[in-house]
Length: 70
Image (cartoon, rainbow, N blue to C red):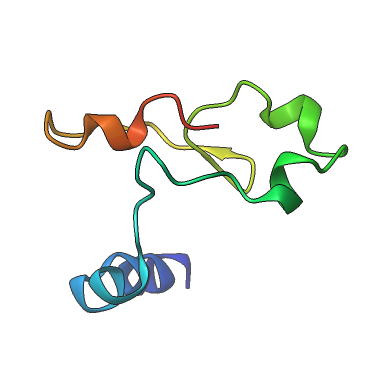
């Protein structure tokens, strides 16, 4: 089932419609930024989604989207 869901979420039809990468100016939501139970774990984390670290090797044109994101 995992492979099926992964295929759906990474398909161009789903991804291009629903996934919007943050820009350099996209602020972190206050409900995440000021949540004390998450603060010690996410203060200096880069590339985390729901506590999962994902290796990221963006292209030269997209590297600014992945750099210094908390």
